[in-house]
Image 1 (cartoon, rainbow, N blue to C red):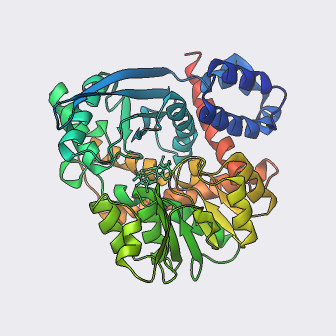
Image 2: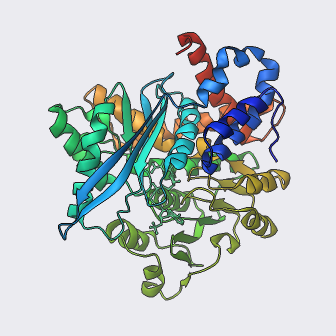
Image 3: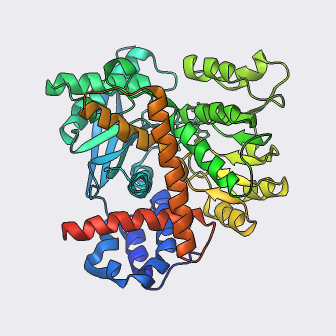
Length: 448
Ligand code: NDP
């Protein structure tokens, strides 16, 4: 069971009771509270004024009906969510996820993680998350547009560049952000570019935002690897997923001299021992919105595995970049047996608690999602900066800022872990650094 300080146990018990059945949210809160024992031992005043209880309770949760009409003229209905978790450091900031698995517990876990991740970037953004159980797979472009318009018709009243600024996540990419922004603009009669991030370049987007999460995760892992002497050069790498995060992780790993030999989607994984042909993956997944099995059909040297785990493919570096709890204890054992030296989470909470424990015990470098994948939201904050100053930066300028931010997050997490007596424990470092920044702001703002 959990390894929680006795002063924090009642807080966790209350969270579990109050949010019954929300397994992913329980997991995320437990993981953070496990790190805070040493913080409250050193700074007992963080236990005052129910500060930690308040961090675990969203400031506001919005759940709404999203009716829309499909191409056959039938009325369809989904459920929409936005959890505005914490605005001590800035407007709520966090993506929207469109996937049939979405429920309030998933959105709360993501929003909770987002608070600390956003604090880690050092930029003025609070934490939030939203989405819907809508499944864009198999929908026509017009259906996706009508859904996005209906979704925004309710959500717009809760947003604003100083209030809440959503972005993309699973199932929400450039196309969806465009439709959402169009409807927001129409409803408010305001060209408020800073209300959404991940926008297209022609209407206020930032260069390097599309690439940012994957590039950022790769920079983070590169920095971790360098603590052991060298980076990606000559390393075998496995990246799960083949969406936004996975694709740009593969791109940057390849640029830094690593060889990515496998990637996946929800239907299975492909192995290409010569190294993934990224143009082909982009053509199949980014442009065609098709199944990854098509890669093996087009590239004879590769093969597709429908059932089984991508983590059985031997590698030096594993970068889970699909979804939560996709890398289990069993998978961690397989990776460790095959000699993995580093794991960097591109996705949010992709490793189960058992997997994280096994990596720690085996001395595997482990970069948790809230630190390793913070490059996406950091670049979203840079997009907000550009929108506010009506400016637009070059790709190189933006990527340089991203790289600096990721190196800074790495170094701060490492220093905090050392300060709290667990050198190399990036989970502890990330949780404690993020928590202290938010807690200090919350203390200053009083009981609200
Ligand atoms: P995309 O929708 O672009 O891609 C998701 C990928 O993961 C697809 O390949 C998808 O397969 C696969 N996938 C999704 N759900 C499952 C599942 N239940 N089982 C197996 N595979 C699955 O999303 P992103 O790349 O944007 O997001 C991936 C992860 O990264 C998520 O955890 C997200 O929260 C996190 N993240 C994203 C950020 C961003 O900027 N986009 C920022 C920080 C974190 P298929 O094509 O078959 O659906």
